[in-house]
Length: 174
Ligand SMILES: [Zn+2]
Image 1 (cartoon, rainbow, N blue to C red):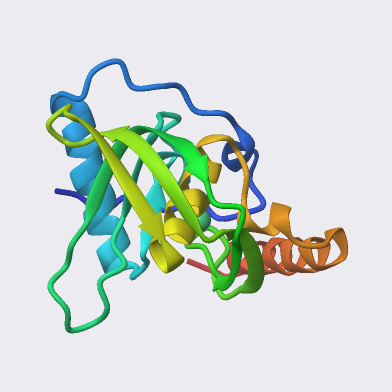
Image 2 (image 1 turned 60 degrees about the horizontal axis):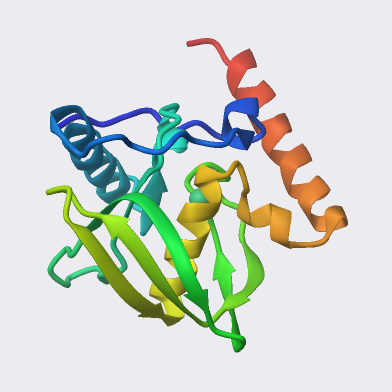
């Protein structure tokens, strides 16, 4: 397994739509494992392939708390089949928008269909934090960030701060 560098916003690569996976085999399985390792190391509770510059519909999530046994889910071609009318708000963050958080309202429950790491078609009903996390990661596959769900004013503020942080980092001597 390998740690992959995570792309941070603003970056045009985070705004692209990803292509479906044709078959879950060696290369995709390796990508899933690398995503899991990168997510756990960050640490984070979700990571999508475009965040490491791979424009494929692959993501991983793991909402196990610190001290709990890790329980990563690996998904290819995830698709939301159903969303609850009831909404829930969580304070979201993102490894591509480090140090920024905002409350985002999303369906409280959803049913998702995906291919697992063995290429098996699976369905999962998720609720609460897991539902939010999966929807946040699927958004990444369509070039959507959590800040796209909040007010333009707040989004602008966060993106400007991230841009400034990037420039500062580039200006620092290596
Ligand atoms: Zn994210």
